[in-house]
Amino acid sequence: MRELRKYGGVQWLFDKKKSLVFVTIVLFVLVILLAIAKESNRDEDVFSHLSTNGLGVSIYQKANQQDIRLVADAGFKWARTDMTWSRIEEKKGEYNFVNSGYDELNKWMVDEGIQPYYMLGYGNPLYEENQITTEKSRKAFINFVDSVTKRYKNQGNVWEIWNEANIRFWKTHPSYKDYSHLVNEVAPIIKKNDPSGKVVAPAVSGLNDGSFKWLEQLFKQGILKNIDAISVHPYRGQNPESVEADYKRLRQLVKKYSSKNIPIISGEWGYSTEYSQNFQDDDKERKQAEYLTRMFLVNMSTNIPMTIWYNLKNNGNEFQRRIDNYGIVTSDGQPKVSYLAVQTLTNQLKGYEFSQSLVSGKRGDYVLEFKNSKKEKVLVYWTIKENSNLKLSIESGKGNVVSMLGAMQRVQWKDEIHLHLSSSPNYLIID
Image (cartoon, rainbow, N blue to C red):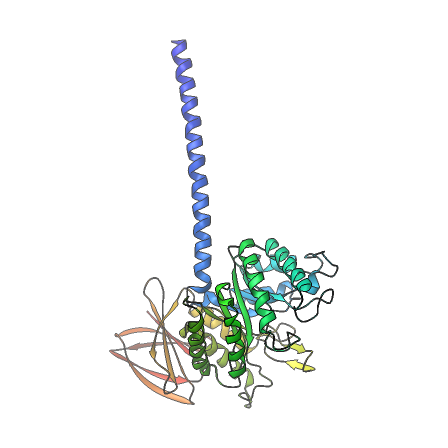
């Protein structure tokens, strides 16, 4: 009996060890699968959906923790900032991420659930300032990028190569040969170091005849095979709806040089309350809020999965020697009307994706439909005219109309709804 008990105990212990090993293996596999699923979802969230998950704002590299909280409280998911080479490498071959403030800034963003959008760029006076034209400076920049992308990998970052190389941010022109050479060498290194990230370029300034000529020269140099998306800065003196024709023209140009479906993102675009010709009335902040809201909505409706507003804060402009009022908060962090408009948009459309345009906008009226996973709907509507009245045939129902700044009114309708459209977008939240 003692031998049997001993044997039974050993067998039980052996079986227990096998069970523990089996459970450990299963847990390990589950962790791996969850990690893969997380990375897959992260990739999908970046460029595969037309939702508020693709909205962000530009911040300056010296942003503080309160600035990052303002970004998060607005409902933004992304923050774009310069990853300035000369600030990190002040001595040849030495990369200082602590004293430069980037470690701290990166931690604040990650802690607040903000995805970093890092612009890798500008020259370094240790090698070559405001451009990369020599093999020596190109190698130094590559080493810098290698170090940065290894340090901040596995976060699902967007990595942008340089900023507006078609204008003054690249010293010598034409710049397309040297710039494309840089992109084609740097992009594979970023992808190797950070498979979770996305590589975007060229952050082209403007969508006009000059920038389209520059883009075509870049495409001829083969950069499209190395980037994950094309980043553009479609600033304009006109209303945001005017961008639709420019996006169409750009897609036709891309199709000419690539068979891939390469996303287009709006990496920087804003309207100043102070200097835009559109804002001559007394309520400049409200006009900025209208253009901001419509810019985000128009971009989603034209298959632009990511839009970065410029800028978080009003700030001094060293080039113009004056204050630029592109911010959605004042220079001391006080919310402007635009900030409230962002909060309203991200709150009302949280969990929803763009579905279709119910009114095309050809006559100046816009009605966009958004749906969530439960097939619930939100309609967003406005006009580029002063005012417009529209009858829309939809299934009888009830809901809430929410204004651009969050005021709410209960409504119901039978077979069709009468919409009053103004330059300020409204949200119809259907029960």
